[in-house]
Image 1 (cartoon, protein in one colour):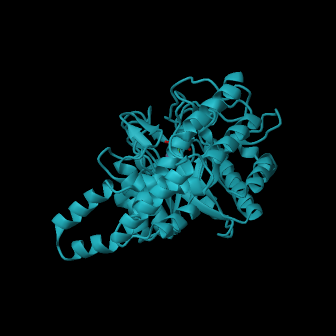
Image 2 (cartoon, rainbow, N blue to C red; image 1 turned 90 degrees about the vertical axis):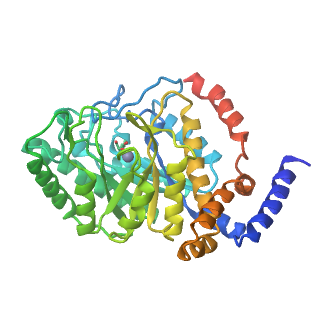
Image 3 (cartoon, rainbow, N blue to C red; image 1 turned 90 degrees about the horizontal axis):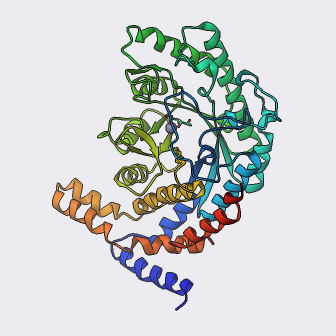
Length: 422
Ligand code: RNT
Ligand code: ZN
């Protein structure tokens, strides 16, 4: 049997096993095919951006470690890398840009000066690929963020500057959504916080609230733009307080029906983002996720198929909220092949969703409703040993993308042909 026949045969056997539990695998794959995962552009170049030739990540309490060869140094290189990533991924993707990734033509365009024209090249690129774009204001790696405050700054000049920046970013995002015919998500994450114990938290939070009110006073059609705000517990150098905490943004989002962005690297280690999804969905229309893998001090390791990600996927599916949860990735690892990092992480998220779509949910719910906790736990465990991998491999085959381990050699070839020559 050749590889293709093997995968097809494996699928037929697996399909029958799932069918015996009342699960329709064809239906699961049909749904998985439509889920869009937003790829964070910043894994290509370690969150550097293209404002200056030597642009790099500074401040903001986020860090990239590693120096693996092949980092994208120009927009052309970045697009080449992203083309490769898209080629290796089944299902649908989007691209998530930060404001520092514009085409500034070698001139220094400050953050309060950026315009749609700096991103038109990306819009055209996305159109060519038939994918959507998402956008983020960049409130770090800048001299006006050096004291640790942006939208919540007591320095009015700085605060005005950042308000103007975010307003422009929303305008750019809305234009992306308009031109591409799919709404763009604009996400606000600010690094504002303090290293040591502050005595005036209230004013900073009041200032942040006021800044957001000013920013959101400009309205855009929801077919073009969806707004999100991302909370955080702490960052390096901002250990004692983060102005944009979960309580702050959740309250703001619920009151103003904005999206809350849940980054699963931004909570206490035993808190589960999967548990938060159902709560948030009862009070806001949609959510944004930043899927990542926190380890100790770092919130941004490459996503793998672990319990956190599985629960997130299960909760999205169990809440029947695939159309209300916007899924984006957010990690940056410079210690390994960066294209490989994207492919591992995106495929892990898709696998988690597939696993969730293959749950015998009717039976599990019946057990739960009848108080049969042994049967519920037993069936959840049994599902882990079902031939899920056979369904996944068939999906990759169906989608014309590398099956199983095939993508490893593909990426090594790209490394040899392209990355090591940079
Ligand atoms: C930082 C946030 C934020 C950033 C990106 C680059 O802790 O997670 O989402 O990672 O905006
Ligand atoms: Zn994030």
